[in-house]
Image (cartoon, rainbow, N blue to C red; front, side):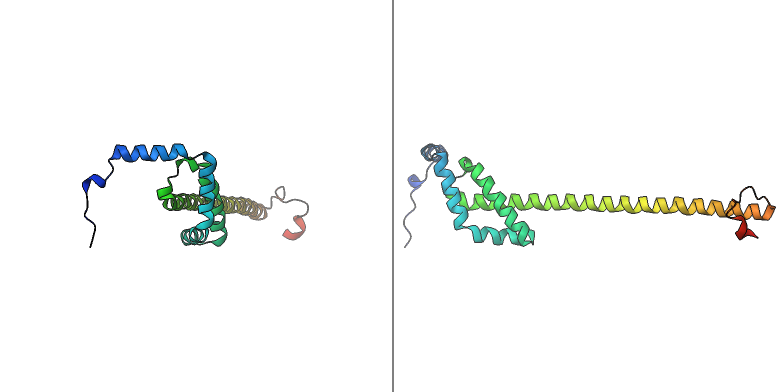
Length: 160
């Protein structure tokens, strides 16, 4: 059967914080970094599959994993061994979200650039079309009125 639950077995929040602080003070930065590195190697496959599920792109998942490892090692002092796996997955999720935001920004910039390029091209075509149309209108008016001053020397041969 289940062991009897004794209220005295629970640590108060202050005692838990004190234990956590004692544990952290015993861990040197090198020990924590080493623990993070070992954990990243241990859970590499799980982390990459998770990132692949979020990003839907193997290359992006690989890049996000590498950045996640760097961030985890850089912030190793904030890690708690009891929640290390969840902490690493949270960093991985944050990296994946960062990649998705960057992709969204890049897509918006490309779309704006394409719109500007197309509208600029259309404006240039419209300008050249309208100037051509003005020239044709002027030419028609000149032919109708027998005013040859609008017609250049090259154009005269085609008018008659």
